[in-house]
Image (cartoon, rainbow, N blue to C red; front, side, top):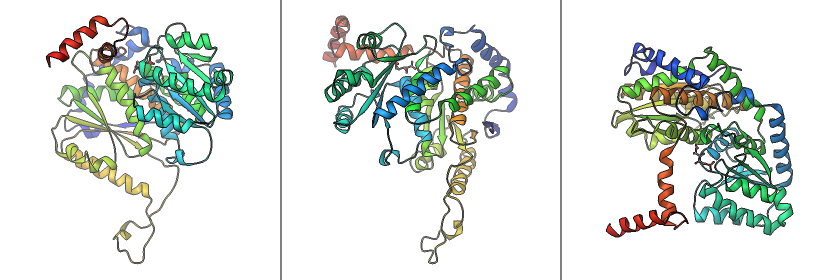
Length: 445
Ligand code: PA5
C-alpha cells in the first residue's frame, strides 16, 4: 500500500524551509509529550497507542453486533454529536456510493442527535414509521442534551413499534464505563453496551466503538481502518515517517507568519464530512487562550464558484491544505461529439478525473500566485486502509501542533459556555441563579 505524502514546497514564498525547520526541536518535544505524557491534558492520550492496542476480541464483538443490526434492521440511527458523530459520518461518506440513500440494500445508517432541528426529527420519525430500525446511541459524558432528546424520541418510537423487549435488542449504547445518565439508562434497560475509555476524548474517538460500530454497520472493513492507523502510528511514533510532524511545524510556522486561517480543500465530494471531522479536531483542540488557527473547509471545484473569489483575492491571512485523492474507484471518459456545439471536444477521450486534477493544479498555481501558501496531502485512494492512516496522521499532527501552540490540545472548556446559557433559558433545575441573571440581562437589552 502506497503511503500518504505531504508536499510543502508551495509555502516557501511565505515561510522558508529554514523557518519551518527551526521548529524541529520544539516539535520533537511536542511529539515526546504525546508518548511520555509530560504535556498538558496527559490524561487524554489514550488515542496515541489505540490502533496498536485495539485487540481482535473487541473488533470481533463490534463486527458481531454490527452483523446482528444489519440482519434485523432496514435503518440504523447513530445518535451522537461532535466527536460522537463526525468520525463515523466522515468515514461512511468517504467510502459509500454517492447515491446510497436512493439505492436498495440495507441497512442505511442515518444520523440524529447532531442538531436540535424539529423538522429534521419529525421527518426522521416519519421515515422510520413502521420500519424495522435500530439505534446506536453514543455519548461519552452520557449527559449531552442534543443526543438525549433524539434518543428519547426514537426509543419511544421503537418501543411503540416493536414492543419493549424487541426494541431492547435493537439498541446499543456507547458511553462511559460507569458515569452519566446514558450508562444508568443502559444498565436499567439492559442494553448491549460498549465503553469509551476515560483517556480518549470525543474528537479522538473515531477508532473506538464510537466510530467503528456505525462504520461496521454500514458494511465497511473496520480491520482495514485500524490497520491503516496502526501503520501510521508505528511510523509516526518511531520517527520513520515525519509527515505528521512536518505538517504540524509548517502550519505553525505559517500561523506565526500571520496566516491565521487554514482551509482544508478537497476535490472529491465524498470528503465533505472528512472536512467537518477535521474542523472539529483542530478547532476544539487549538482554539483556546485567544490563540489558534481557524479551521475552515471547502469542497472544490463546487466552492471555486462561491469561495474561490475570496480565497484568490481576499485578505491574505489564509493558507490551504489540499487533500488530493490519487486514484478513483471508477473510470468515466468524456465522449466525442460530432457537432461539438458545447465546444468540449478538446477534452474528449479524457477521464473526468484528469480534468479534475487539472482544476486542482490550476487552482494551486493561481492561489500560490495570489499569495495563498499551499500544502498538499496526497492520499492513494479512498479505502479503509488509507482513511485509517489519514485519521491517525491528522490526530498525531493535531496533538503536536497544539503543543507547539502552547495550549492544552485535549480539553474544550469553551464548549460549556453555550450549554450554561441554554440550560438557564430552559429553566433546568440547578440553574436558578443563571436563569435569573440571564433574564435581567435580556430585559435590559
Ligand atoms: O470532542 C469532544 O469532546 C466533544 O466534541 C464531544 O464529542 C461532544 O461534545 C459530544 O459529547 P458526548 O459524547 O459526551 O455526548
